[in-house]
Amino acid sequence: MTLTPQTRQRAVAALKEHLPADRVLTAGPEYAAGTALWNGAVTSRPAIVLRCTSTAEVQTGVRTAREFGLPLSVRGGGHDWAGRALTDQGLTLDLTPMSSVHVDVEARRATVAGGARTNHVLAAADPYGMVAATGTIGTVGMAGLTLGGGYGPLGGRFGLAADNLAGAEVVLADGSVVWTDAEHEPDLFWALRGGGGNFGVVTSMEIRLHTVSTVVTGMVLYPLRQAPKVFARLEELLADCPDELTVQTGIINGPDGAPMAMLWPTWSGEPAVGTDPSGPVQRLTRLGTPAVAEFETGSFATAIAARDTMFPDGRYVCLRTRSLPRHTPEVVDALVHGAKTMTSPLSAFSVHHFHGAATRVPWEETAFALRKPHMMAEVIAVWTPETDGGRHAAWADAASAALEPHAFAGGYGNLLGPDATDQIPHVFGGNTARLLAVKDTVDPDGVFQGIPLPIPAPRALSHR
Image 1: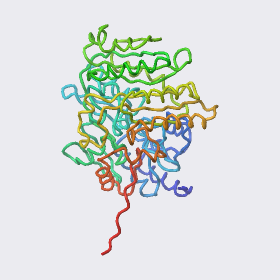
Image 2 (image 1 turned 60 degrees about the vertical axis):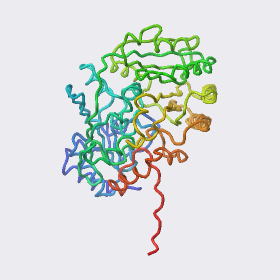
Image 3 (image 1 turned 180 degrees about the horizontal axis):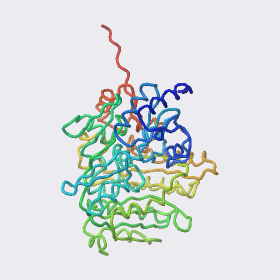
Image 4 (image 1 turned 90 degrees about the vertical axis):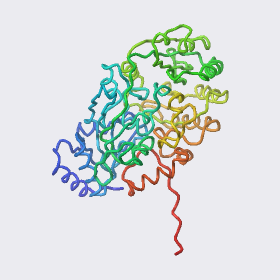
């Protein structure tokens, strides 16, 4: 879409009739801040950024976009690698000023504003000895993570972030506001748990919290040549893995710059079990001869925040994802080959562990459909702007293609780009028809474009 200067001026004027002028941004430092994303390779630039501080301002933004025919996007944490937080030549609702978190200790619930990040949520819960089911790092937006599913270090014990969503306030495509939970707008509530930001703007969520005062976590690195043996032995350990232990794995470049097999466990049970030399966490150091084996006991909030420096904003990123049954020899061979052909020292494989509580949610209970035990693999190509991005993206494509024969159909919607046309039709499995029906009901004009949805089948022509 090409936005004429006249249309933009009219839209800006309309917004300023209802909102302070400093919230309506078309240029300058505040505009630059509102369009700065985790992935520096994103080039989309909205015509207008609206920095929202309330649900009413989000409503104004949605209605204005509809009135002037502007494409609309929502920026929460800004961590979506595909850049869907920004809409080129359209209107972006920047929710980052809406970052409050209120904890109800007795109910073990938190009310989380739409622009809050994981770090905001965990920092609010931590003084009470409580945690939320979150992702791996703290700078990710909590709403976006939750709406798409939300794999994380506590998934074995507490399920996905989406499984811990208790209710949400949503601004719909017509600008109206609804509250949705298991009893109110239940179809919308079902769709929000895995269907992504395709149904409205979530301005506030209520999420469940859990009592966990400390976790045992850390990293074990093995030389790449040991990867086949280490991952084979890991499979034996994971066969009877307790819910309290979730083990993220992968391949990263180690301290000496060489690729290494990575184990990144988080134990959320009794700390004494996590530190016991004969316990399941410490067994991870005896799968081979580790080059690094470091653990610490402390709050989950501190552990997550400490990881943020590994994933700074502004680098260029191309990401692919596959859902894999387990660390089979063929999968490990593909990972090792990918490590040996890696084109950037910043690139990596990150493999998330899906087991325990997350698998015990019936597949039809939420829009997130893949409830079998599995591993969600991220193929992450990362480079700095001065290098040739084409070859790094080509590496990610090749590594993903090598994993494809061993993967389930589909993939993790939160990480699939719009060009993953072979995977998108299979993401929601048996939930696809219901999900598209909810979309057609609450947003028939396709105002909201979140994670990729399958394209509905053409409606049959009537012969009457």
